[in-house]
Length: 226
Image 1 (cartoon, rainbow, N blue to C red):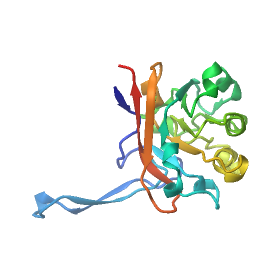
Image 2: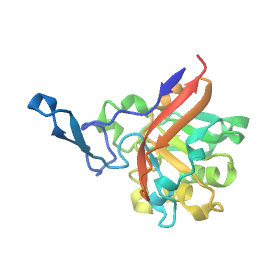
Image 3: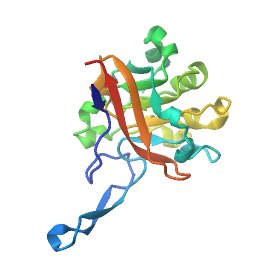
């Protein structure tokens, strides 16, 4: 059975504080006498379910088109069950609680439970849970099979701490210099809750090949046992 973990894009989706809103501009419409319906979108690459490429926080990092396709396909997904409230951080201890499965995982999906609040943008956007620097460093340097991380909030990094600290979590995960240029990508604003407690067989999340850019919308799909 396939489960879509990504959210649809619309004009009223919750966005990271200060980010531009989505715009959908009709160009032609059949009900106005045109032969077809066509639309232009103005899309901020870090709105909605998306991938952060290394270039997002690394001038010498790969753009989204340079991310190896293997970094978008996962044979050993692991959901990290880590219920968190407002402003709470995912710790190294939350990771270690996963036991031996942690050492085989090629993507870590953090289920903080915050997906339940996405229909309430005021709460969902306000100081959401995020990953601690200690946990990010452990993933980068201690879990060599991990190719990606995914979270059910607007960002892997605290919106109240990250901007004032130079975004250390993003830099630890994405920067090519932190671990012998091992590629690692970040997925944000995905609904991990949908696969909580299920046996995941495979997971895919492919970006658009936007030349040299810092991110892309994705559709993340998990195959689970029926």
